[in-house]
Length: 265
Image (tube, rainbow, N blue to C red; front, top):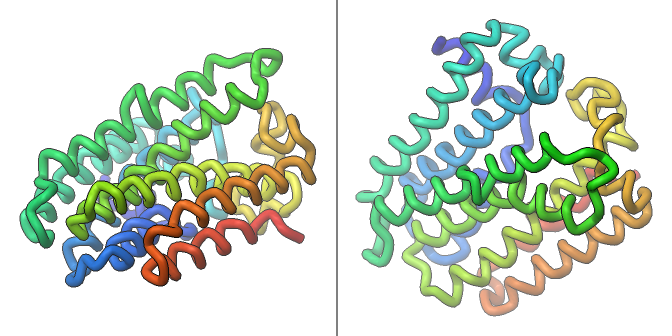
């Protein structure tokens, strides 16, 4: 079981979500980042859990993830399911233990845990995944696709940014600014992922060839140039949201630029 947990959590990956938590906390003056690292790890545990579940035969039935066999292929479906839930429960434990070590007093463990739970639940990641599973290709227009991925992908980006802001004892104005940034960044990230599926080789993506061939994606709806244009627009909105933070947001602007690179050739 522990080998499966490590395999799921520590495999090669971009780690954009935990980096977002750390970058937001640093930008807003968290100071000591040691407890923030714990929050960032909790976010990545939730993400790893979602990937294990996504890859199961009942979901996407994927064979490869990040260039390696998926967790259920390596350890079996029973162990994969238990590993996913172990990662999820451990994430909440890590958040609860990190909260008392954070600076300031605006946000306690209860609020941190609440924000993470909201990102995962039926109004967040799970809700987006459920709608994705039940939607037939002929039903998917741009509005519905944006709704799915703003929840399935974007909600965890939002939680990552909010946890980082809370770790810095952020004022409501700054919390709102990074939340707007994260929402747009998360959706742009998904579009770039769709572009990668079309433009990059399986060796580059680490996924099965044509994994999204039967799905409706932003590229299928808008074409490559249209999807790129939408991603660029979302990233511009994300960066504009950081204006109230001034120079403090330099790393967050750089992160938005980095997210915009993968689908470019």
